[in-house]
Length: 196
Image (cartoon, rainbow, N blue to C red; front, top):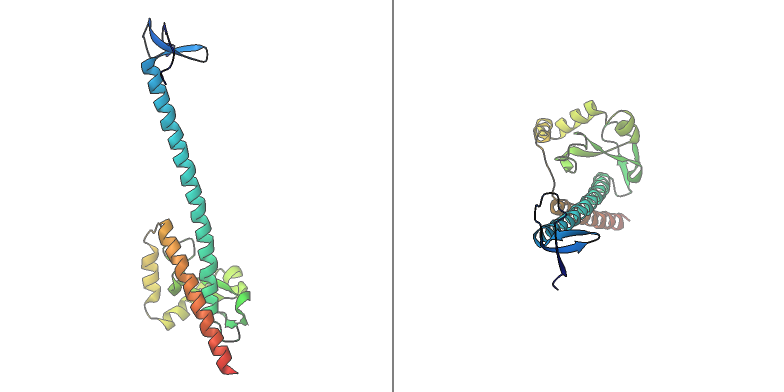
């Protein structure tokens, strides 16, 4: 559709066009060239806003995946170290409790994204050790080193690396933890049924 034009002076302060075909926008006149530029800028601005909105939604989606990963990694670690009756021992102090009552402790703090879900860095801990004693790190380190010599140095080296997980990597990791939990629960059920 061709806009109706009038002859006049362009209202754009940057344009010096006078007595040219203009398009009326509201109460102002704009030359055809300025109007095309204005519309193109509006289209670009709108697409940038859409992209920003889409990116924001993806970031929110990413944060939900991170939350789910925390839940499933924690469940996997606590279930993995529990016995067939669902009892689990705190890795640092030895207190026994149901696996649901324990936390998933991190030797390298969970703020470090490169090791946040690394099973070498995770062990079940009672709430007292994990929350009130800040992970009881001295005992944690001693037991980890005894269990796997050289692991502390390896974890600390890897912790210095910056890791920015992509959304797809996080999704694959989440799928992997869900699969591990399902297999682990089937294995625990099989052990329970054979023990009777």
